[in-house]
Length: 381
Ligand SMILES: Nc1ncnc2c1ncn2[C@@H]1O[C@H](COP(=O)(O)OP(=O)(O)OP(=O)(O)O)[C@@H](O)[C@H]1O
Ligand SMILES: [Mg+2]
Image (tube, rainbow, N blue to C red; front, side, top):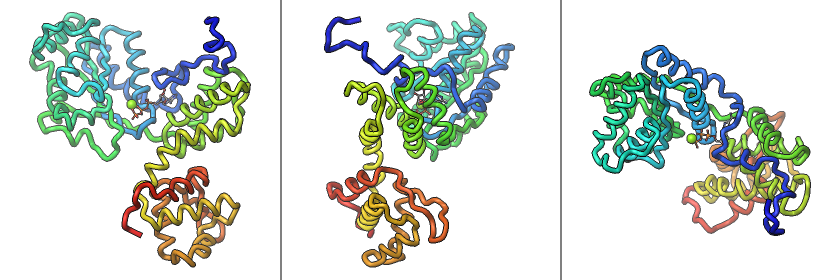
């Protein structure tokens, strides 16, 4: 431990700060049993000398796709030499050469020789090793949609899935991952690829609030000293992360709030720490969501935010009635729907006067962002 008073860390609230790193691989992966089982089912035949099946993994950001693959690959590596799992991050490696170099390094356990300038030499090295070990290859192309604009998606799939045609190896499996829900990675494949690519569809839905809470509670148990954060505040963080549909928001918020309390020399996180951390994390997402709003939609958002802050009736009927003096009933109706579509408010079933309007963000933040005229609003009113 350092003797520098500036760098002393013995006052920390973190039992294990690594638990809050995004690269951290959790011991237990909650709520991903079905997806883990499906992937294991595709890998299992390779243990008996057959080939690995392929899959397309789809789900919005922060739904555990990468973590699920990394965990199952780790388990495979520990359990058998008959399957060689290879993980490729296509955000970093998009060219055929970069992808093959990454595969070579993981299959052969050393970097591809710099003399291996030609792809065929690298492929040959990979195939020789697989043949010698009588091992089946499974490649995870994480964020595989990045390969499409790079022009390498079809070539790579074709070559990987047909490796067995050129070399004496078993047919490889490919796990293609995307967070772009509008994209169908199977449909993006050429007919020549599709004839050997029959992927199982594995879907990763956003976690519910209860699921987010459980995942975060696990991190708190492992990463923080007891009683650093209360159940109420953890619940508040889970609500924010679930609304953002990204578990990363929850992990970042937790860390941000604890760091703030620690800096202040407090032993427990207070509500103000969560508010401040939430502002830093959610404001960019609110800015994004508000960017597309028209002037009228922004105006209604500001007005609703003020009403909520002042404790006014948030039933949609009451809001329309009060808003009609300056927006007109039909216009406010349309604007409210636009705010819900943009993810700024939720319209929950209400009793009596229409639906209950719930703000997804702090009213002050909505007011500040929607009132700002820094970004010109669209002409639609
Ligand atoms: N079920 C879970 N249990 C514990 N931690 C989880 C779980 N799901 C996700 N996480 C954590 O959330 C973070 C994001 O997960 P991950 O990177 O796997 O998401 P992703 O779906 O691959 O997102 P993206 O599409 O943005 O790449 C990671 O830090 C991971 O450890
Ligand atoms: Mg990922």
